Length: 467
Picture 1 (cartoon, rainbow, N blue to C red):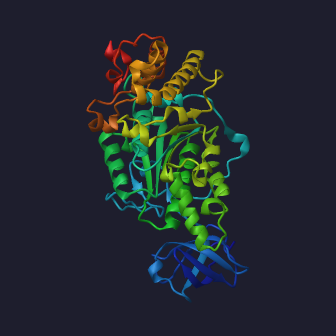
Picture 2 (picture 1 turned 60 degrees about the vertical axis):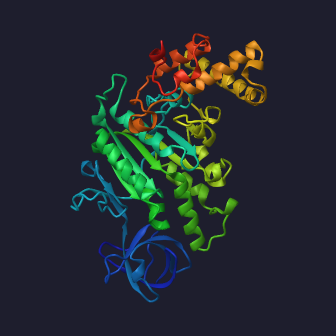
């Protein structure tokens, strides 16, 4: 690494897509070092990998139009830095720390490198405590663990971003009494990776209207950006989360979405001439996922709870890019196109949803027993679905009719009007405490609502609304 203020001179010898091959004769930069140009400040590259003894593949973050063979660049041994601190809360920035929300262009005083911090392993802690979201189907079947990771899996247009936004709103601003009185110690970081600009704009407007924005720092690398920027946006978001955690905050980190991070890495891998692995993904996918997720840990200083949206290409959960994310998650919420087409919101496939915290050691016995019995009822009701489609519900035995109807009641009860999507259900948003959800499910399973039409339970909060 060069000494302070010492520049290592380099020459661009090749350019393929968003990857430049740069030769350094009088010294070598480190992976992650920024490569700049004395002629053009818009030229910004980052060392990605070694190409040979004196040549390095560098990600072209900006200014590609100015690059050509023989172009002179230099490195001072500095890393890419992102803004942090209170001033970045309520703002939207890109990986260069530039505001993209149309507000003040002023500089952010505090900046940190996007490299992983050096947290000692002895300071890392784990918790098995539920962080309520007020969303019935999540709190009951796949609770968010404080300091854990929750994944929202689903194909295009089934409501991943909507559900993610509702969780952000509820956890930061609402409690059982409707107001969160501890927001001072809670902040959120949102990393938009490879999604549409329209979705980022809508999220910003929604957070602003709901009064959540002052507690959220947003960093965007949208679909329109090149693969290098999209890949590094996820790392930059993780770095911001590490900073707020080290400042003693309980951090809620959102990323939408992790599959686009994997996809960007795949694009860069091809450009750097690496031989692909399974399903055409990069051979380094597993290590990239590990490196990213291992940053999102809780320490003795603060908590980082992670919620990840994961796009499922062609609704195929067996896709290798999707499968590479599973090992790092504590809770899994699977969104289904079939459920979405039934008009249920959120469109969660309950039987494909799970959580490692569903254990009598961590949740109440009543909650645990209710989950097991609910899953059994739903599974049995699903097995009766084909028979009902062929001969009708009334042709089932009395016992099977009871099971089938309770399954439908449970499915409909798990729908819910969202604060951030009141226009979709026509009902005001509802926050339902976990204790209330467990009580309602116990009542449903006991047969207390067998005489009620399942449609009556669509888009309500507590079942008491139908008494």
